[in-house]
Image (cartoon, rainbow, N blue to C red; front, top):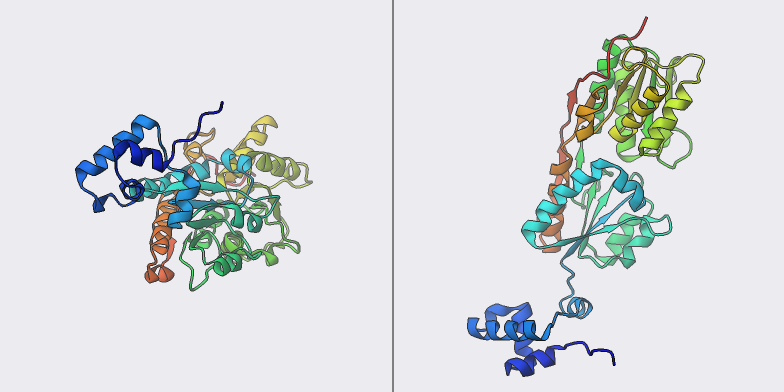
Length: 348
């Protein structure tokens, strides 16, 4: 016969207290004496009792869990070390504040469909490039949320970086080295109509590139300038290099909008026996750990990834607690250009 689950009533009988006292011992122990709490917990341990999480959530209307709403499927997210650093920052806040963390990737290809099924007290929404209804859905459900690397909404707390500043510094560095045949490899947006229809951080990075090109009398439509989109994966970077290297005039510099794409470009260049930076300079964006020890080391833009995760989680915890001040939290963090060995003067 299957063993029966130990209940709160069983613990009450073993400890010779009321069922209400057992509930208080687990949920509001300061209302009981220390001796009573100790007696109840010892009885629970002897019986192997543990609270039913679903019942507890129904009773308290809290899960003590933060949700991270992700823009990609989990296998793709875990390929990118960016999210390891981002999760470390979130984890620091969760540890300090007593929350767990639920990763919530798109359900059947939709971030919107994920929202009703995630048992969390609030969401960190990462990389929402364009509003497909997620923001409205969270508002309608009254779920606290914080936007990261998205678009600014006055009444929603947000954390972002100065994307334009970073890419502009990167392009200026390459242009000053004499490069005029430059490929810009952006993170795939899923939108049609080219870069003029991009939104969010990808658009902001492109705006930084446009500003740098304009300072040298160039535009994205100028001869020698190429713009393409690829998935934000190492394989996406490799495919970008292979497409670019069969052109009649290959670029002398490739600007990737993420380190993971840039590392894939370096992989493919090595496979094709193309010298970096002798034949082509390569740059990234993020400053992942591998960027400093890749071969060659990667010129990139450092962004405070861990701090971004920590701040977003702190804002969300405040919003869950009902603090009105969180609506005014809009933090834009600065970036830094790191020049390493993957960039050099334009060949010839």
